[in-house]
Length: 249
Image (cartoon, rainbow, N blue to C red; front, side, top):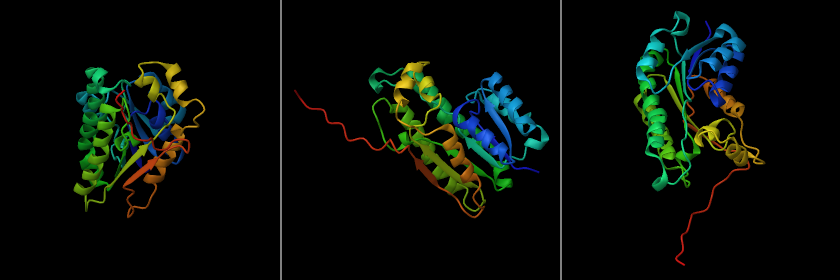
């Protein structure tokens, strides 16, 4: 029986690329997302090794219903990839929309811990693994990063605590913290501004969704006695900014 991965946010970006990568390697995948048309297309592309589960990750009742409805062959989950997440807005805190902050917290924090908690008994029973997708924003603040960076800092710290709590169970926990990668991320962040996305990534040679999918798969492919605690990766074109200094005029 092939191993089974549950990948959230599989309708685009890292999640979709990861679903393709794992199935190509002989795994079967439960792919979650809100857009049923994209999940259906992925199922048509990848075949019956993929089980589409359409729900909004923020809807706990829908999440639990989807888990309860899993076909028997997909119930033995060996790997949870908490990939679903988003940024909303680019304005500094004093100009940001509170609704954007709440959306990020509900998606990046509350939904992640809810799904993780629901799957821990299965993951412990199967000595499985959790891969949480965080961000370099968890470590390096930037103007407009406010609540987004805060949510990703939570993901990274929660992962460390989870690893400590799961000591002795055989469950592995990894945080992957990517820097600039070109996906739909910036289009979503700017509420649909494709030009802003094109400008951000233009000429930067950013990482791709496939780069991150390869990293996730590499982590999942390590032998059971080896835990990768944390991976931070950036494109070569991206490095660290200097400190801001405001001067009186």
